[in-house]
Image (spheres, rainbow over the protein chains, first blue to last red):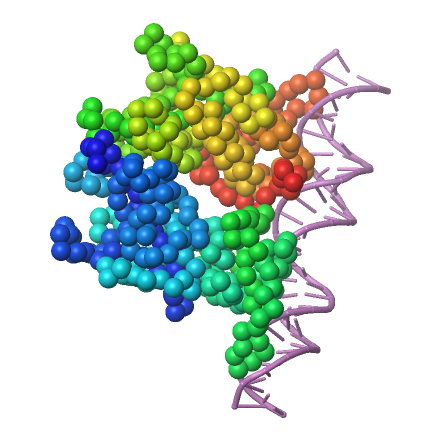
Length: 227
Length: 227
DNA sequence: CCAATAGTGTCTTTTAGACACTATGAT
DNA sequence: ATCATAGTGTCTAAAAGACACTATTGG
């Protein structure tokens, strides 16, 4: 690689919901690592592999797991002279969302770190804890007026799964009435006809009508606001 | 400058409202220019001058005008191998907003290019037309649920000035009733006590209560939606 | 039968929007 | 007085939220 991109990197905070918790994907330090803490999947641009910046982000994720994020978004670019001791360094931070039931074959270095109260519970290398926190803030904000919570659910999901995603990400959720009204309107979801059964009335299983179309709502949920 | 940052740059779309039009700040080609078209204020990071990425953006603006943007926001980072013939190139695109009455002493190279229907009327160098369009889309979106329209107004402004900003930026505006309800609530504005007189009833002149606090509303204006 | 969760009906609240109304200045 | 624009009063509309209600399963 040419030295011209020496200090540009892409850092990805890739989230999933697993066993009722939000988790972020990290890489464990390996033999030639310079730190003992896990770090976000990150790396420099490889002009021969990455046509676009987004390709570089997807490539980082794929070094750890064999799955494609259903959603990928730039969170911020952070550049200054103190985040890396080698000099002025710039990183483009991404937020990636992974479906809950991807048959993920993790690399042995992959480690899913739980998120609690908006922060990863394990200390991360470099400034990665702050980067994850910023990605989580973006997620917490956008969950309230877009369809992105759906990208963290399994292929087939119930409306209660949506409410659970809110609880997991924000610590609180809108009432089911409001979730029904919002998500059942506008041909957003497709009824699979199947039901999820438990020791109670079975719930309808839905799937995303259009996996590539993120929609915006024109109001925020009040119940999910912090104030 | 070290070669290590050779292909990272910051590009700024700095907007103002002038004589009822939205304009973007551009630099005219000078003697040693490689193009005949104007370009956005842009340049590489100077680690010795720029502590943070935002500093680099502000510095670009100040090469053309002697004024500080009241609002500065990252729009996107764009990196690929076709936007610059010299190779894979990354730029962080900023949107900056300037108050309407800044006593701006422009450099002789500064050129305010009118915006019409979401695009600059004059052709810009490189991919700068696309960058401006992306910044405008962000502005058009955020004007509907934040206080950012206020950053494009003069120090003292009327409520009708806010409506005009909507018309200029979106081509349509919410009814004055809605603008009043939204902007007069929550101690956002401070009544200056002064009035603007015309051939009609004088209008109250307000100023921003807190210049550094951008607030969010939890609903979009319906009348400003495209559908 | 009961417990538990799914889902509906309906009233309230909030804020945008429509629109008629009044207010105040220049001429 | 008239015109133009500022600003208010008040009703409607859309969507969130509260909450009581019914529905459907396993046990």
